[in-house]
Length: 195
Ligand SMILES: Cc1cc2nc3c(=O)[nH]c(=O)nc-3n(C[C@H](O)[C@H](O)[C@H](O)COP(=O)(O)O)c2cc1C
Image (cartoon, rainbow, N blue to C red):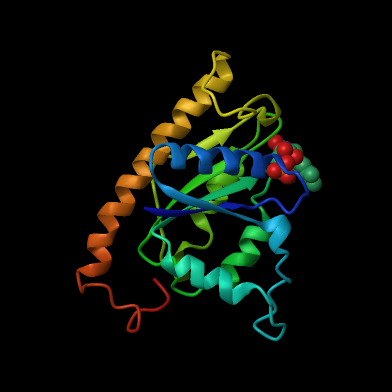
């Protein structure tokens, strides 16, 4: 399976990137091909309806088109999901359509659930992706995902096992939704904008 993990923090050395890289390495260890898109590196201009051309967007969209599934890793900033991810969503057409997306909310404190709730509402309609039921809320992120081993520390072990489970569910959805895309039922030309 080809899976793209989007680290949706625009900060240098973000904790969201650390989590994204752990998920990528873990996917590799269960024989899944995964790559990370880091929104700090990508630096997309603010979407303005298409007047400003983003240099790097075509390569990104072509990679999204080839991928089977996605993980969105959003920090909680000011009680909100990443506005960088929301900006990226405006550039996307149907490259993610009928493909599964696993959601991850990241907080250094006790947050992380607001980005999950907001990502469940925002973006899927015109982009047509399918959010899997198993999300991950990473709280106290500075203390977890700091090495690849599962280790023994309770909070770290718990969230890593939960991540392993959610990723395995994502992989199965990735396989299952290939059938939907090949079925002939999907008519995005007729119905491009969801409801
Ligand atoms: C501008 C800003 C606002 C933040 N607001 C919140 C918040 O509302 N709730 C929360 O739990 N953490 C908040 N944090 C802390 C993040 O949870 C913390 O930076 C964490 O590492 C995830 O962000 P990162 O991926 O950018 O590192 C905020 C951080 C920044 C930089």
